Image (cartoon, rainbow, N blue to C red):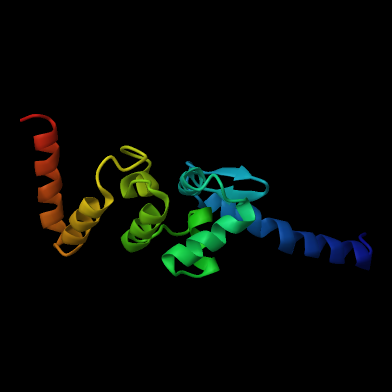
Length: 147
């Protein structure tokens, strides 16, 4: 039979350690557990985009750039949420990395065009309905393929 102290320690351990296990179980297969925290591929890309920042300052940087709370940045880190397009654009402007690469890990890492032209294109696309954006994307892919 467990003593009162042993039961309290056991209950305390369950409250501390089980939430981490459950959080890790909820996150998709692309994640890895690092330093007892779940870190997503998105957060790895955000780290790569800000190599000069210490880990403890990185969250504050994204809070300031995007105008979001610490909780929002923490959700990006654990995979509970992703940055909005507006936040990804802010990160892109601050770091020089492509929006698509920041969000998806696809495409070139860095802008290969004048940033102001890209910003104008993104702003114009944001103003369109989703089905029009898809049409424009298909056309751009068609043109890029040399057809």
